[in-house]
Length: 265
Length: 207
Image (cartoon, rainbow over all chains, first blue to last red; front, top):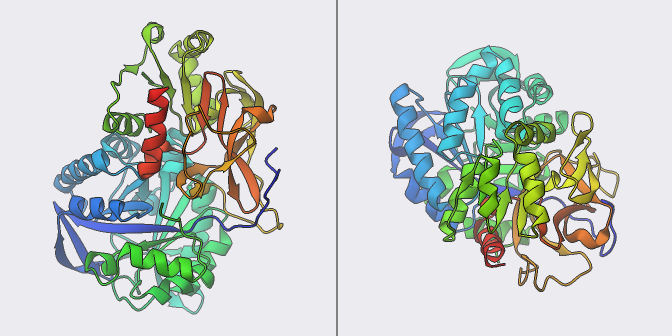
């Protein structure tokens, strides 16, 4: 029954275009290599605009993740979830099943876990078992150490973990992660393109979808990371927040380039 | 009325229903289903876990009683899967048995034999399966409109006539929407599918 009955045509799954919003306190910020922070504005305004322009998902990343900021993030998520009816992922400093539950109640659909999972991998299974794998996004911030080798960093790219990024992705999948949000610390905020080799290495090592993050500066970068990097989704930040590229522009370009983006009706 | 199936997308569904102007009551006790005009059964996560939650709260039999009264029931995602006889996810678990069929893993490769990613996550358009959508909750739904999916298992209804729509994944047709009389379901998430999804919820509310 699941096999084609009629009009059988080969199509790739739709490539997801995701807006990534890094948050500090009440503000959308834009960092460079996950540090060096600039305030951009009210995150909700940006999220609503991207939703109206047809973004496929929103990712909110708490850049500070102090207790105070956590309350502020929950308030942002609550406001956004009232008017933005697409998947919302929240990450940054998630340490426990209870924190994940609170964020899901506030309106998040998925939880991205990074630092805490590198210290305590069972957190991945705990969240996946409680809320389902579709809720559990493993966030990997990786830095190149040698050709074809990347190390996982925690605490916003500040602390080395000694863990190999490709092995960690495979382990995360085994533990129940449903998706990987893969950020190149080297490329993040530089607008010179994604770390295509990193994305490809991880995407080929796992069977779960990989979201490429960090480095989008121009339209051609999107083509590279999807075709050569085999990204299943792309997280876009800088170029959207500063208005150098708009979502309709990105979607039109991707469609014309033959990338399988969602048609906007 | 929205069934509190203990699932994490309950509030997302509620927010979307509020947005389209529904008068939403969250039902967490069997007796609350007695005077529901419409019932939505949301669900995400593992099938067995979702069914166990319903049984634990006495809601499993209450949903069956509700369905017998021929009032509209809409299952979403695992909520739709639970309408069937059962699922093979983490060993066999019985479902509500309102629709004949089983829930099975999405094949690991596409029609061309190439490996693809599981879970199937993303937006897909709906392909009509046989019958016209007139009079159904998909009436008037545009062929070019996409809705959001996230799932690793897929329902295989025994009766082709129960299938309203497929979604294409690498040349494989996955059951996207089902209907038999008052029993309806979507594998996709209308509450997370932007305007297209809100429109589907509105049509369900108008039925």
